[in-house]
Length: 362
Image 1: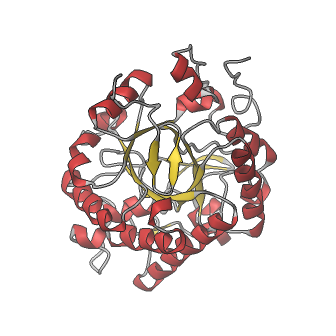
Image 2: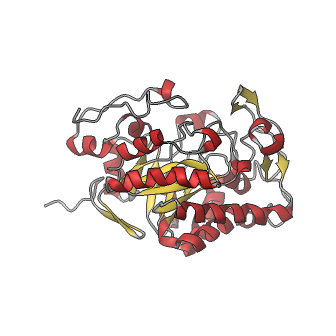
């Protein structure tokens, strides 16, 4: 009998025994209701995908200030907590596990999305190139306001409270979103962090907010129910760093003492390389991290199995394939044909392209 591990080898992830290593990646779908409250349609969407070894929810803003896109769910109001409770109950009814991804977008917002039309906040007043998605259509990003030193503790408190809200909402754990050019990533990288105080300058300072936020969340949940997501090679949202290997190498090693449930890393993409990113395969960070490593970006069944069999990763998260295939683990197990995702329905709308992809049995 072969002892080689694959996507269907059970795994102990923190507090949980997972039946497989096929993880549903966090996927922004812009389908929250009024007040950014999750709806019954969202509950059906997640319940359909409960056969994943683990679901990581779409990114959810920790405060009104943390919002950067229309109709993204929050985790800061009583109504949002109640909306998420419908979802966690639906997933648990099918035997699934679901973590909530905690999100503050920082500068990747627009005054029209901010309370009282305020400027978005960031580590430094560095305007991103590109356009913000708003309720009035695409609009150019603005120059954000640099957070004052005495405001940063309040950001940490927002994460702590959001973690408590996620616990009340019935989640099995949380993932700290430190990737993709959002607030924690903006502090970590020197292309967006020009501060000269305790949160800027050397990497030890730039990583400080990520570590403080993660510790605050661990204080709520315990380390065995918390993950962190990072994107070392990503240029998404106009992100740069002068030495990403050193920056992320430090951050990853600094997370080790927290004994997290997992670290979630994004592989470099063709878009990253086109935009001047440094391609650092996640396996280069493998030796730096002591815990479980989850990887993401354009994996399929075969490449996912190879990553796990080789020891380069312990779990693989899937995005677009899970959008189009609610029963993705079953299809992988049977090597069955896959539904093709429709990018035109990824963001916004209703059931079309959301809950109407057929399962294999259909």
